[in-house]
Amino acid sequence: MSKEMNRREFMKASAATGAVLMTGGLSPTFAQELKPIQLLPPQLDGGRPLMQVLKDRRSTRAYSSKKIPLQILSNLLWAAFGINRPGTNLRTAPSGFFSNDIYVATAEGVFLYDARANLLNPVLVEDVRNLSGQQYPPPGVYGGYVGEAPVNLIYVWDRSKKRPHYSEELNMYHVFTNTGLISQNVYLYCASEGLVTVVRSWFNKPALEKKMKLQPEQYATLVQSVGYP
Ligand SMILES: Cc1cc2nc3c(=O)[nH]c(=O)nc-3n(C[C@H](O)[C@H](O)[C@H](O)COP(=O)(O)O)c2cc1C
Image (cartoon, rainbow, N blue to C red; front, side):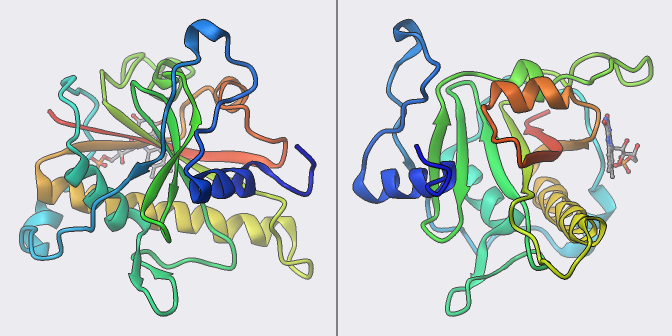
């Protein structure tokens, strides 16, 4: 794949043609097929009153292994950073000039959220949650792992996208602010829906980025575990 056709463009093309993306490094044993997952339209008539949700918002670090149904995952991703004004492609969270890509790590593998197509594009046929769900370095206060959370959202900044007249630092502020806004949307949706979540900067970033086969310019900003108590 040429540098010009990066991973994201390749995946968009794959999704458009209905093709299944297989990652290069997989052994045949692990090379089961993962197809793009069409997410469902978000349910916009649900949810608890905002003030009640704010009262209940909190970080939780213990999860059951109960899976998240597709409709709930669809709602969650739309709440996180979906398109709420289709004519303009603007989102549920404010964004600077460049924002995060959201990767979704599940037991089945890693997917990239495509908000425009309301689609999850497969990136890696491997369960990376032992890295994305692990507190690293293991701190005494919170324990080593963030439970069995069925979903880890991995927020990724593509540093190749930058405003040339902005410093690296200013580009970074924009992206990290966007990460915070998205992750708070996730917190609020979780509090409304009876899901639990925690956003985390303690993860083994180099190991996770390597496992996900991210490009050198891709930078994992934060991860967020989501599941049921
Ligand atoms: C930028 C950021 C990084 C965080 N990193 C971690 C982390 O690595 N591990 C963790 O367990 N919690 C992490 N948290 C969650 C905080 O510990 C938590 O929000 C704080 O203890 C307050 O608790 P509350 O969210 O229940 O109000 C992080 C929060 C933020 C905003």
